[in-house]
Each structure stands twice: as C-alpha cells, then as structure tokens.
Image 1: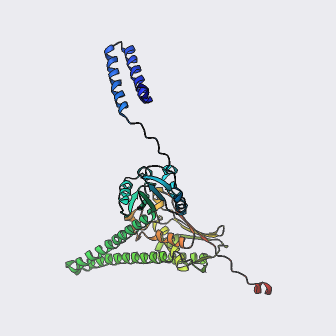
Image 2 (image 1 turned 120 degrees about the horizontal axis):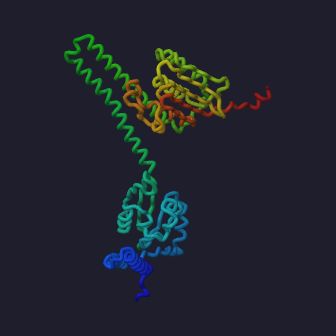
Image 3 (image 1 turned 90 degrees about the vertical axis):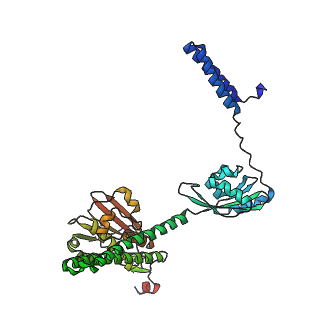
Length: 409
C-alpha cells in the first residue's frame, strides 16, 4: 500500500518533516515545530486528495476508410476537423495552422479552445446544424464561423470559416453610414434653425437677415461639397477594379491644377512653388481622377499650412514611376494619427477641419485614386514642421513601334 503512494506524496512528507526540523533548530521550541508539522500534515492531506494529471491520450488510430476523407480535407483552404467519440481524429493543414499540430487526438473541447465551441459541438451531436461565431479564436480581433454536422455514429465534421474581413467591412459600412448621416445632419440643422429665425422678427432687420442668409449659404455649400465628395468616392470605388487605359501627362496636369489654385485661393495662391523635372514620364490613368487627386493634395497643403509659407509641389522621375510630392510648412500631424488619415471622416482636429471647409473625405478619395492607378501613397509629418505627401504612379509603357514604321525609318 505504501509503495503505491505517488512520488509527489513522498515529497510532501519530506518537505513537512524538514520544515519542522528547521523550525525546532532555529527556535528551540517543540511547540512551534509541532505547529509546523501540523501545517505540513494539512498540506499532505491536500496533496493526497489531488488527482493524478491525465496522461495525454494517444491519437485515435485512423480507420482505413477515413484515409480518403483525410486527403480530401487537406485540399480545403478552410480549417476542417473530424471528431469521433469527442476527440479530434483528423485535422487538415489549415486547422493545424489555426489550432496547433497537437490537436489530433485531443478532446475537441480542449482542441478548439473557445467557450462557445463545447456547447455548439453538443448541439451538433444532437443534429442541430446552426452556425456559431467564435470571437477571439486564433487572435483577439479574429472572428470565425463554426458549423458542425453529424456524418455518422458519434462522428462530427466541423468546418471553420474566417469571417474577420467580412466583419471589418460591415463595421466600416456601418461607421460610414453613421458618419455620413452625422456630417449631413449638422449643416442641415443649422440651415433649418436660421431659416426659422428669419421667418420671425429677425428677418425684418436687413443686417441680421443678410448675416443669417450668409450662414445658410455657407452651410448649404458645405452640404454640397460633402455630397459631391460622397458621390466621387462612390464612383472611384465602383471603378476600383477597372484599370485606366489612357495616357496622361501628369506634369502638364500638375501645371494646370496649380495655375487654377493660384488664382482661386486669394493670398495663399501665391505661396505655391512648383518644380517639374523635364523627364517626368506619362502615366496610364484617368485624367479627371488624377486632377482631383492634385486638387485635394495641393488644396490641403494650402489649407493647413501656415499663411505666408510655401506650398512646394514637385514632379520627378523615379524608377519606372512618376513621383508627385506636396509639402507644406504647417503645424504637422502627431505620429499616432498618421495611420488613420486616409479613413473616411477621420480628422486630427475636427473643429478646425470643419471651420476650414473640410469634409473629412479628401485623403480617403486620394487613397482610392492611388489604389486604382496601382500606385503608392506615403504621408510623412513632423509636428511644428509640416507635412509631406508623396504619390508614386507607374509610368506608362512606351508606345509600340510597328514593323512598318521601323522599316520606313
């Protein structure tokens, strides 16, 4: 009987006796040593009642008839598991990548490691085939849809589908609708409020009436700009997968846009400093969208740069790219805001942006235009120094020269 005691019990006895002896030597008190020994006895009682840790189960041998099924599941891009008798007998490559190579042979409830999985597996075993969302499986921000179905006696086939991207897209859509509604409601409420005031006695005073009508006009123009940007963003997104097919002289386009802005932005128009290299290549693009990109970037630099400081616009040639750079000398942007600047309606300073007429969609439009043209967008900024935006657009391929033209030459 004594020989059957586990090693941990003998270790507990030894520790209890050694502790009592040390207490007696140090204190010279037999009573203290007995108290220590009593504490050790309590520890021994606790240790004795503890269950031995379970030996990991050996992987369930794979029946010959399941070999083809295992090969079939390996071909799936999504994680898939075959569970028999509550244990995982097959896990395809995607499932092992998600849950770990050790899951084969484990209890399914331990293998999937999600509190919602155990209940779903029990429901599936009873014939229910509803799907369940597992939030946090594989990562804090990941979402997986799990569906189990019985395919035989005490056997379940479990499929996991990654829904992280779909959830993020839906959240962006909901946020977009909410933000757009808010942005439209704010000027509309202002317009309605001033119109109601004008209908009262305030409308009889010319000075007050003119001031209120000016505010109504400004808010209506703000709504107009927002609607135009929303429609523009919608068109750009609709064309996202349709590559442009027209060669555009971006250097000439930059000159045209800067000339327009220099005459329509008052004193700030004179702050534009344009530098264009002689060998800037043409790009394959949409001229209207590239013009909008230039208007947005140069307009932003004029808007947020300090008055009287230069707005530097340059066009250079890179490695098979036309490179546009717009730099201002403004307050700059703190680094924590840079990753979110191209999000719809994201503003570093909402109050200042609205007061300057910003819709919160300018850089989102720029990002989508760059993506459609298969270019690169980089935004760098230093607080107190200014912001620099760089766009690299692939150069257009040189026109093919026909054999007849070569012969004639």
